[in-house]
Image (tube, rainbow, N blue to C red):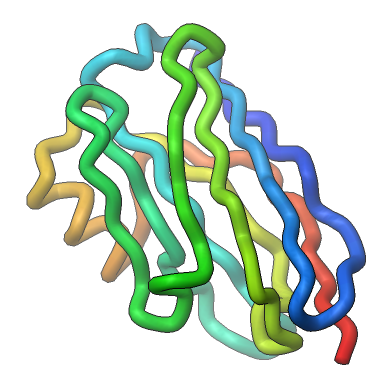
Length: 129
């Protein structure tokens, strides 16, 4: 059974930083992709960033480019989005999503549309002004 466990959310002031993590289990984590989506109150869910754990290719939404960095530790089956220069508009519940054996094209499409095959339960990030 595929499981995704997010952690690292919390309350931070604008301009601050947080590092989330997503630990995956139930699959081999060598040819797959992990992405992050977020959903703010009253807004649609949006793709934030993603990484191919096989080749390290990364993807970012325009709204977070230059501020967020995603990385993976394949030995720990964990992906880390480092979020810097946080803004109040980054406030949302952040969800980890996993796609098994996704190509780079599928990762990009997933981030821009509906996400991947599996989802975590989310971790809340609140940025105060």
